[in-house]
Image (cartoon, rainbow over all chains, first blue to last red; front, side, top):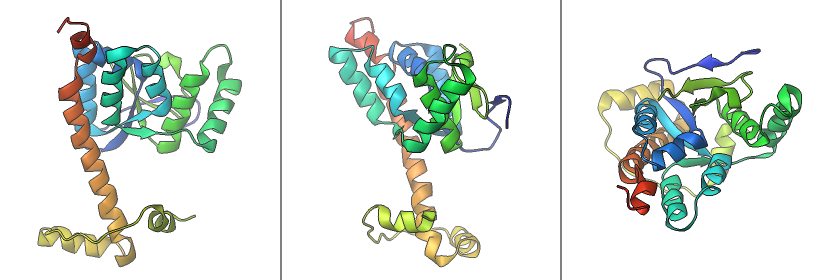
Length: 139
Length: 72
């Protein structure tokens, strides 16, 4: 869909769900809202984590917190960044708002589009909306 | 590269024996060409295992950072 984002999830559909870093961080910090959002995602689809989001989580942890985060992330299927994703992210960053979006978030959005996944996020404004299917986490 | 060729090249494969309900097996045979059945079953199993692993992680790691900080 060009020109705007979409909201998900539709009933009965099993989708790949890419989880944004802020939800993973909230979950590790014990947010019951993040837990509920992730449980709903796990019921409705397959949770996946972008390698970029994994890096974002690792970047705010050290010591035992980093170990716990790493073990948790090992439990989710990781989505890497290949040449196509990198190229699409670069285009999104350049054409849709250098200065408005972070390149990291463009990489996550591009992975989501390539996979045909739904992005679970608390803050959809961080991501270029074009072609992106979003499941807003409201907590 | 087609999905089928990519699947065949990706990793070594081993035969496994499972019992499946007859109607399910009949539907698999009706809908999926013989050459693609292993790929379809492997894909479905991969997704289901990922869901099981994720649910376990949600139970095991909720609030893990608070626990590390001694606030659990």
